Image 1 (cartoon, helix red, strand yellow):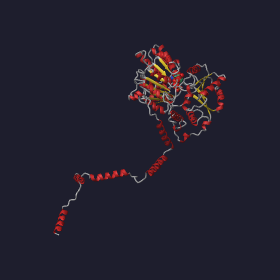
Image 2: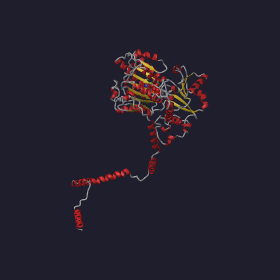
Image 3: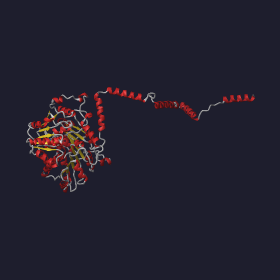
Image 4: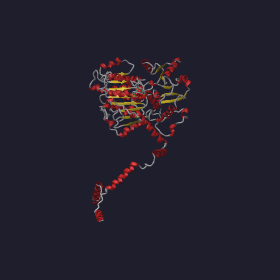
Length: 602
Ligand SMILES: Nc1ncnc2c1ncn2[C@@H]1O[C@H](COP(=O)(O)OP(=O)(O)OP(=O)(O)O)[C@@H](O)[C@H]1O
């Protein structure tokens, strides 16, 4: 019993002294809390618990008790609500942005060598040319007023001033004589701004309507550069060129080459050193072309295929080359010469001045091409892709079977020379044959003809020995037939840009011309809508058949047309050109890649 009592006392005593066991972690925390209290700091325990609570709630999420399917339905509802608050135009713009992003080129128009070595040029090339003092002293506002007067739009940093007279551009007398001999007295708007930009060594994108004198705007600065380099230190055999012009077709290259040769004749006769140019195009023998190499070579005018060939065979190199102009740059890229151009750029060993010129230049190409340029200046005269206002555009509804007979009647509208365009080679041949049968002095040109036939047709037409030239689009881009009175579109081209280039063969250098276009049920609705808008823009008569067409773009009330091709009658989502390009890409899948290109020199 006593044993029991003692034991309970003991237990009582033990209970008095009882200190419950607190694990070391909690004891440490209690001590920290006490210290915090003494220092009046917030208690960490509480904070931690709250954090734990936060983390718990994060893991589970506020909608942890809602199924994923319900959540998805909720998100969709929310989006539908947001969409319903947007206007149709906003929705369309968003859609178009997405399409544009999808088609945006990932690749850059820069040489592989520069990309591989990560060579980036930050400053434009320096030249010795400066505008005369009285022009340098003009205020920015005065420059802007001149631009406004000539409807010149510019973009870029430190843009050289526009200059209204050739004499202020510091050209030597033989060049001024050359200009006079061509009846050229005052610069056209693209020359007013484009020449100072190019002479200053700046990279540029030049956009101006057909027949506005773009060729002179890039070939004069190149001849000046060649003269300057030759005068500083004459080139010897194996050296050169100092500059190149690349064109999408042989005919265009030949035309540019011939006008440069004329300029050089004047400078050589005027006592300046001899400049050697080379025409580097397919269809003429390489050995003929090689004769120029016995001296230094100054200027090359080329088509991409033959140029690449000559570069790869080391016929000449680009070690001294400081100037590259891509004429009809957008056409070149459209036609599948993009890789060729990039490859050509790889042969440059130093910085070059790069100029891109065209009458049509969709935004996509501008953005893409900018990667090849250093602080470029963009010079734009009128809307890119707009028609030349000196052309009277007539559009007539002619049934398919009546076209060939009506063509004969149409030829009576103006005196010769007349240019007739048709989309495909067979039609060109048929029209040509029909006109010959009817006693019309006609020649024909298309991509299926031999080089000799093509050259004969162009020469005899240019020399007024033939009255009518029947052509596929071969002749529509860039070719300068001096005095075309009338362009007849036997059919409407599939892309509005081609229409602009075709009718641009008349109404050149300030003269007026007529364009007649046959349309009928065979034309796509899109192209007719593009045509309708183009006619409206150029303040031309819109025929009732086009006027009556319902216009889907009216619905959105958006301006500016297609961001891909520049057509005014449709949006990018309905772009026939983009559609054709996609179909071509799909068609190319699985084909051999070896040396194949989308276009070819046409
Ligand atoms: N300042 C000028 N004054 C008068 N005529 C000019 C002037 N500049 C060029 N020309 C003439 O205008 C014609 C058209 O010029 P050019 O071929 O350079 O046009 P373009 O803008 O290149 O046209 P396209 O887009 O069709 O290639 C040529 O015959 C050329 O000699």
